[in-house]
Image 1 (tube, rainbow, N blue to C red):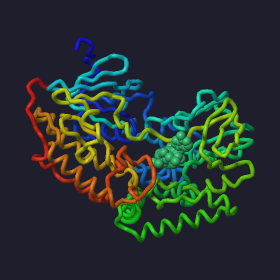
Image 2 (image 1 turned 60 degrees about the vertical axis):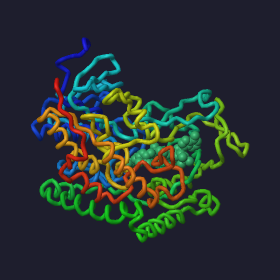
Image 3 (image 1 turned 120 degrees about the vertical axis):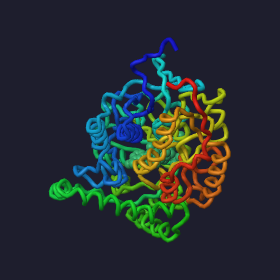
Image 4 (image 1 turned 135 degrees about the vertical axis):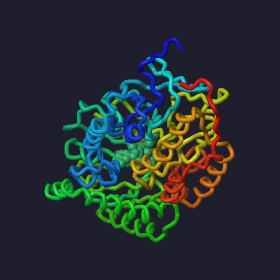
Length: 493
Ligand code: NAP
């Protein structure tokens, strides 16, 4: 307690300054709660859009859906925004909504412990903060996954993960290898194929790809949106309805026709690969949507360039100057790019969270994450998540999901602060919620037989397995207080 810095405390402590954390701050201010702090491990806002700066990085969700509904942006340059434009949007949001004075950069939280009355939060520096309420807005895809390939540490040239891109990585005229064929790879490959002398793409599993163009948004349309903001609001609402009724419902098993259409479109994109042998090697053996679909009209053309080759035999080892594959080939390389994704099941970890009666979140989640409506956990009083486990992030804009969840967290925070109580969901309500969700998971396309970052260690998708409309409706309900354990606090911060 002696190390606690009084002036840095906030009644609410938000962890993370990406889309979710900034949103939480905006809504707290709107509610007149200004005593909060946002602890961010990095040196600026933006979350994933600060961390991912690889060539070609961008969003594959339409720009108008990938911003706050209350801060629509008439100035997006493209239908799908480049990563840096989204990062600048978030910087601008931090200014416009007066969040700067609440932000603490370079402040990773390493532990948070419930004292019986409030949270004792420890930063990596050893500094301690006290908070009545903690909101974890740490995101899902923030810890890069490094492959465990023999010899990786022996590679003589630069090795860089897409999510930790180094701008000085040499590309021009180099022999470059990209390991992985997910969304990050599908963006980086076309962006660098024209610069390198040779590019080898190491594919373990092919992905289904939908050919989607990314046109620039014309100046006159941007000007019109600026003058008539109602146009953006309509477009946002219409797109949400269309996407949720078709795509989102299809992935949770509610619209087989849409899935059939998606499969026809993906097969049609595949037919653009002229060489039948290459096409065969790029054809997935699972249902479209099981792994996350890649949206790109540039990936297949890039793979067909004369200086690009696909290596789809298993990688057996890495030497100082290349990669060995199971067919006995050695692929000589100067630079290695790891587009190998994220450790998507870490959530707040490695932060240590110790709740009521000394219970550790890791122990509580030993089998799988257990959450109430993705926003709270039993025995973790006044600890809330935004975009926690089992959120509908595979079939809905994560920004939209964060808005629904923050809307549901706000009444809990208000009651906790006003009545000086500790609130957590009951074991019973949470168990019932999880049983329903896990049962419904069997019907989703994510459970249809493939490996993906959606699946937990038991093979069950850690995603909201029902219609996103239902998630929205559950979160929009007034809290049913009988679902919560509510305890008065004696010594409230
Ligand atoms: P990812 O989809 O998990 O893809 C990782 C790739 O690396 C896969 O092809 C995987 O093969 C391969 N891989 C992993 N370990 C390997 C190993 N040891 N040997 C060979 N190959 C290996 O990761 P990501 O592309 O970074 O994308 C992750 C998610 O981030 C996306 O699904 C998306 O949600 C998000 N994202 C979004 C955008 C956007 O525009 N909104 C942009 C980038 C990323 P397997 O398939 O066989 O596992």
